[in-house]
Image (cartoon, rainbow over all chains, first blue to last red; front, side, top):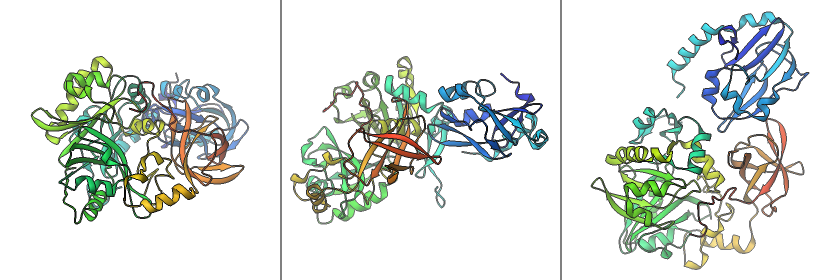
Length: 133
Length: 372
């Protein structure tokens, strides 16, 4: 399990763990609770080059499909085969074994635009206040 | 969805909120799509008991000496086949051979019937009934606002219902009875929309919460789960049931929906009969067909279905089936005679996913005896 306090977040609920230029990406615990019942994950192909904010992975629940956006630009270096085999891992451990893909960041400074954990928590509160039904 | 009018709530709205239900707008009704998990609710219904608030469904009573002739006129199925204490699934046909709604008609007495209609079509149906009852000695009452409805579904449903209404357990499949619950005139039918054994309670709004709470409390030892619309939709699609407005509408016929067993051409005249009789002899050009994905993936409504690379239709209903552990769906395909096993493909996220034609229902519960 990664410590969520050390992660960066997107408004679309992806998390990013950056060590140098090595990035790991998943969805937040809040997102997995909202999605619930993940039954299918289609990660990006290794070697694919993605731009920050580009849709590059699909997570599907019984009810709906969700696009996952690249938090930073770079080249995909790994896809999590375990969540492809058993998508429920995303629900069980969103911040750990449920990671989706890794990439080599071409410009790690792009992460500066993302929210830290405190900012993400505050963002969730404003989202809840607006009532998403 | 509802812009001008506020969404309607069933008598169980506060109960759903207390149980953690995630409320969505369903045809103008605020109902839970799920509580904790669609998968868990589905599993509870297939293996134990699921409780469903279906109070949004409508109830219309047809009473009078011409109640049966009226129902024979508006229904494609033969309502004369059911006597008091029995119910029947039927389609209301229009003049073009399309379907106004799919309904369950219960015979309460020789001159008194209860018609359970879909929520989104309740007003349309009632207007249709009134139009077609002219000149007949039948009184129509739309009591949809008076009644709530709870479905108790699953292999253990009968055991639970026995604790509240012992007589209801004697009902055969598609049996119907009137009874008093908490001193209020109510109805129980041995029907459902999940492909499992079970009953549906139709009770006045004043006592819906009490019946729901009783079922939840007494059902604890059976592992009962309150279930939302999400699980209901997966269960009904696995069981091959149609969702009006999605799989069936004013433009598609019962034959095209692959529900030909509903149409009784030999019962006498009824609305749409000539069109249906023609389809029966000349055949149809499209048919609601089941498909199953052969690779991982979740098909969705509106996804194109391809045969040899050419689109032959789009899916109407589709989901991940926890029972089959595969993506399943149904769609009107331009080729009505595809044999089960025929290889097709479904386009998902721009990718052609291999699939095959399968017979529907996708799943027949071993707990539900056939033919009953």
